[in-house]
Image (cartoon, rainbow, N blue to C red; front, side, top):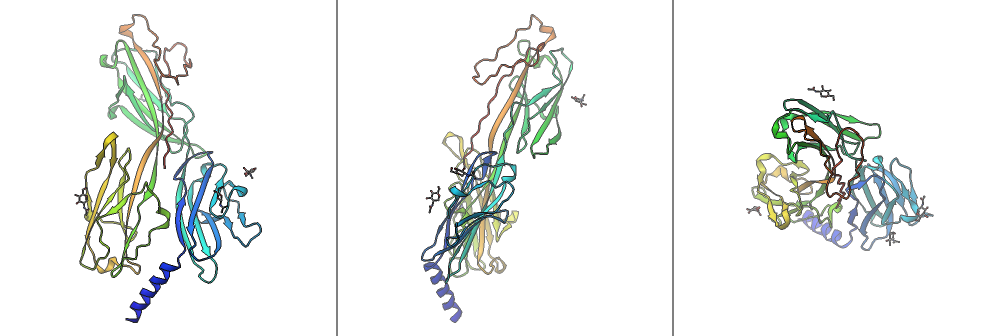
Length: 395
Ligand SMILES: *[C@@H]1O[C@H](CO)[C@@H](O)[C@H](O)[C@H]1NC(C)=O
Ligand SMILES: *[C@@H]1O[C@H](CO)[C@@H](O)[C@H](O)[C@H]1NC(C)=O
Ligand SMILES: *[C@@H]1O[C@H](CO)[C@@H](O)[C@H](O)[C@H]1NC(C)=O
Ligand SMILES: *[C@@H]1O[C@H](CO)[C@@H](O)[C@H](O)[C@H]1NC(C)=O
């Protein structure tokens, strides 16, 4: 009984005097070179601030102590280009980013006597580099005859992450059996090029009015993570303390259907629903930080919304056993991984058919305002067709 009262008492005290991290704003993906604001929001309640410290991969790079003169100080760290005059007790400004800026960024807030509390959260930041220019196609001939063997290689310009290549002929995707993925080329600066070759024997079907257009497209996409509010359930009381790194994270998945209390023998039956997005998310359940067993997982179809928007749903169902309760309760966490296309670029070449050589008609690329019309190969009447570098990062 005494322990129980003590527990209630502790919970009560915590509810009254509690330093909280309300928001950790670290972009999950940034383009190389771009400046970045990092934000650590906290609520001191009644307490007084002692320090705010920032870490990258657990190594401190900035600290703010109101008692210090000047209060803000930085520590040199590879890839962290901090501007002190723009940084303060809540914000940190990184003037630029490079491939070394990638990592996990953590903010730690501590309060003064008498409470001496510390809260901490971290979030990953990935840096991407779009390729400079269209992929390169090698091995093309000016004209092909029916039955002739075609062996083309497409190589993407260096990027991070590495591009995914695809081939099409006259707008139709090429069957996989004609494709051979080659070794990825790695460069010292951390960038990579993908290489995909295309081999086939020319048939009449490959020609559309005497021409065959082969196109290689490079797509860059990046995975980014968002975590749901972790649910912590106790045997007696719901002592849910949301993970501070995910508060206000609207892109995160949501856990629904849970009860506020469970006892050993009860069945947990909950759903995790991803935020509505243009692509389905890949969801994963964790029980006390361990990946949930496949037998506990229920797969549900995606929910489709107008404008081809979609949300993914993944159920978790299991009977609670004593060992599920750790000292601080039972923790359920759902993680959503969404992969976004952050850039595409492609190159198209047009070749003729010897049998239809009624004078090669140099096709002009219609319409694209981005057409650079370069004439790299003189004899070959090819054209650069299409360049679309789109950069849509949202987070
Ligand atoms: C930091 O930002 C200030 C204000 O924009 C600027 O004047 C200063 O040059 C920057 N400091 C460094 C070290 O780049
Ligand atoms: C810290 O810097 C940010 C960005 O310049 C600013 O919006 C904020 O008001 C500053 N905070 C304090 C307490 O000065
Ligand atoms: C295709 O061309 C590449 C060089 O461009 C060569 O390494 C490869 O062996 C060729 N493949 C075939 C099947 O001829
Ligand atoms: C989970 O979602 C599925 C499909 O949307 C629904 O049929 C099921 O009742 C939900 N379960 C809970 C526990 O909410």
